[in-house]
Every structure is written in C-alpha cells, then in structure tokens.
Image 1 (cartoon, helix red, strand yellow):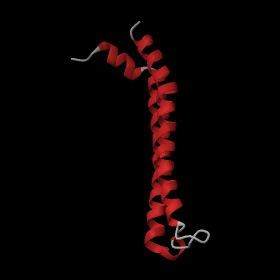
Image 2: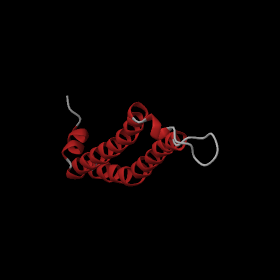
Image 3: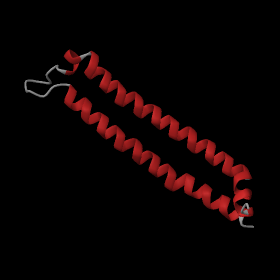
Length: 102
C-alpha cells in the first residue's frame, strides 16, 4: 500500500535536488564543525603550551578565547542552517507539495 502523493514526491526532480542540496550543505557544515571542535581538542591534547600563553598582562590564556570561538562558531553555523532551512528548503518543499498534489 503506497500513497500516490508520496510516490510522486519521491520521484519529483525538485525533491531529488532538494535532498541532494540539503545533504551536501549539512555534510559541509558537519565537516566544518568537526574540524573546529576536534582541532581545539587536538590543541588541548598535543599543544598545551600554545593554549597556556597569557594574553596581555592578565591571567587569561589563549585557550579561553579559542574555547569561546568554538561555542560561538557552533551557534553561528546553526543559525546559518536554520536560515537556509526556513528560507530555501521550506520554499522548495512547498513547491514540491503543490506540484505533487495536482
């Protein structure tokens, strides 16, 4: 028992384009996040003296702003994905649904 609308959606060329674009974009953001996060963890593991360098004359070290960068980077790329999903992907989805219900 297969829904004919679902079958039309799955075979729609714009749906296939949407899936490919969304997957490519998601994997790109995932790779960037993995690089930043694991790069920071690798610095902690293998180059502690680099992260322990003091900034200015205070007690704050280079590791603190780099750690904050990882957190902010995560928030920014999440926002980028949400913006793309709410704009481009939602519009494409509505077009596909409109075409499939005809």
